[in-house]
Image (cartoon, rainbow, N blue to C red; front, side, top):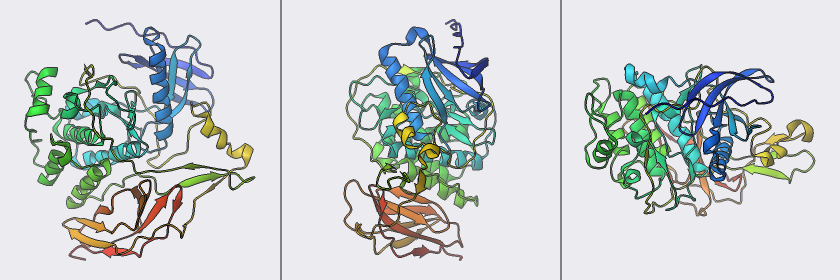
Length: 462
């Protein structure tokens, strides 16, 4: 089939067009230079002949989702979203490289690097899930790379709310990295489906091909669907990949969703345990450490709470949809160079489609100050935290102190990261000879209760 002619770049106030970067089925991506502040950016522009009211709404939904999530260090940043003078919606995005999509096929990627990417992208997916968002198209070509080598998850174009997925959804998909239940139309997507795609992506980066792809064989859509839904997962075929990592990936790609890791963070913790087993320093999982609030100086009671809620997966529902098979090497949304500090960054610039939040965050005009909420003694206190050493992992557990359905636990590792979760169990990689300590608190509606007594564990050899 002949490739379509690229669309004309729109004239955008404050931006100068440089060249085209890539194209997809619904949009073209161009390289622009922003005049103030001066920087190069990727601009994703919808095609004029596909812009309908429903498509415009989908595009706005993508902008809003990216706005909510892009403060995460492993999620692509969206700077601005608007409508061009000729009526085409567009996104102004951070400029990154799409080289990973080709690199994993042409060279053998180091195990340590793949584990690092798996942990970082897994923490991005977990963050999206806690905001109630399913990505629904996790695959290597949707992982871009900053100039500093930090991976970022892109293309939330077919993402959907966990609570909004319904039998009326029409879902695009990339077959090689789609879970069996999605291919069989038994669910439009769930947390465990995303775990399958995460595992399939890590498997691909190690194997140099998608998990059920046959080298030098035929790989039609029907053949791939048949292998994914009925076949046995092929071995990666590398001597430097430990059996423990193969087991993590086999579990994540089980045909039965109940046998998989039940959350992205559980999958991440198992990758961290493999890192510890191999003698690597476990890659930190970038998660919101606690609730925070913006408090105006004029009225401390007038605050906007941005909560980190540990969302549960929506129950799968029977669903019949049109299936669109994306090619294995689909065009990506942003290509080139660009940078991102591998640390949480600030919120979006003015002009993004979430003006209600930005109106509150007028730090200069309103004299707002950032305040981290302190402990609230009226919340339940966690007691009797126990620790069990299980190989290279320490499992901390505690009894339910009487939390509500909307509550969560804040687990703070001494000298390390904090995590917000619903489960009354926390696992962490712990190399032999190390000492791991943590405290647990109850988080409720932007407040954090008193901490438990510090519990420590010291694997053998310490």
